[in-house]
Image 1 (cartoon, one colour):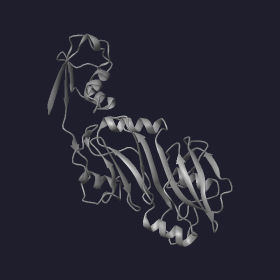
Image 2 (cartoon, helix red, strand yellow; image 1 turned 135 degrees about the horizontal axis):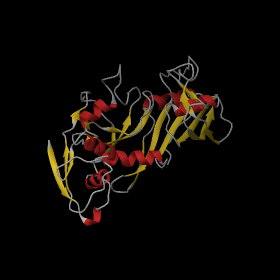
Image 3 (cartoon, helix red, strand yellow; image 1 turned 180 degrees about the horizontal axis):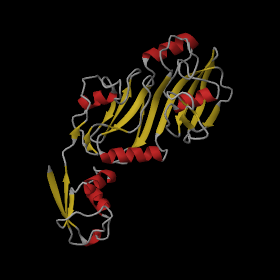
Image 4 (cartoon, one colour; image 1 turned 135 degrees about the vertical axis):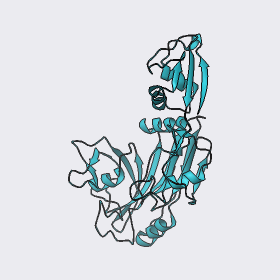
Length: 310
């Protein structure tokens, strides 16, 4: 365990202690710095103070950051389809059937297991050595996902998600003929009142959820949609499409119990991801074509094709 020493200059005088330390250590989040202060790992002039303490010119501040602990998940040599990688973040094209984050019953074979093996330059995000999963997609949804390698990138990407500036494009095959060429579903999503394994449009306790859609093709009582997320609630697209009477093909949880087409899991692919790089400010955009399984089903069952869109 090592410590870093700082002397407060006149320019920084009057700044909150947690803000001062975060400014000097951009890879540490403010909440983590507050934990360090609360745990006595930050000393001001040899003593312990509060996060709200206003530093003064000449103050001597010592910050001790413990080595990151290993996440209780083992790294696994699982192949990854990497679209982009740098010191701050990684963008991958997740296959259908892969769980994003370990949980009870799914502690191996997840995207996090794969990332822990693939990424050799991970930082200790909030004191834990792990890739920062900024957003998730369902197990049976394929496509683009970004993960952060340090606090700075994590907070920057999370802020863009909160501000709804991240571009997230999905392609979905839904049951029925969607009449309007374009539309928006603005309906709060929350836990299903009767089935705790499902989400639902819930006007009492749900959170605001907005999905925009555009028709790409209509054939044989199916519609191919381009969907853009304004918010990112759990199962949002699946719930919203079912809500307007057009559940996703293959989605046995929210659609027909026997969905047909030979699909196991919903026909949903995150084909487009765009954001601003949190460190460089560069606008980044990535596209991922339909996986072969979905492309084959789309062509065979409906005669439709999907080409990457901007």
